[in-house]
Amino acid sequence: PQIVVSVYGPDFFGNDVVRGYGAVHVPFTPGRHKRTIAMFVPESTSRLQKFTSWFTGRRPEFIDPKVVAQGEGREVTRVRSQGFVTISFNVV
Image (cartoon, rainbow, N blue to C red; front, side):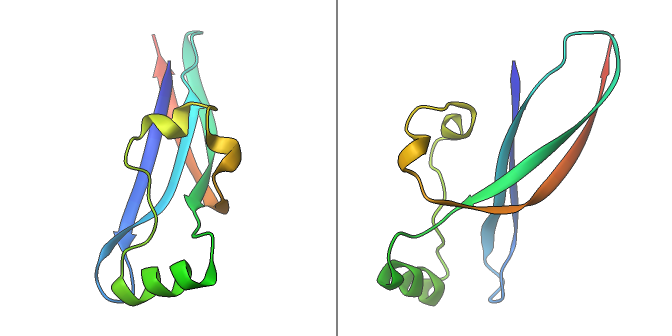
């Protein structure tokens, strides 16, 4: 099993935009586990699309969160690294 994380926040104009996506596998062994998730954001492919998304306030984002957890189709997606999120698991 995996946990998929989608982080949203306000941009300069006050619109909610995606700040990052990431996924991590849930540990099976009992105990306390700490995992750091590398976050990434989809990028526009051309300068025109970048300007249009900035002007309208609509940045690229994934429609289906399963894309983050699967490797299929990700090799053609342009993304940019966007920090880290740390999650703590307590497995019984």
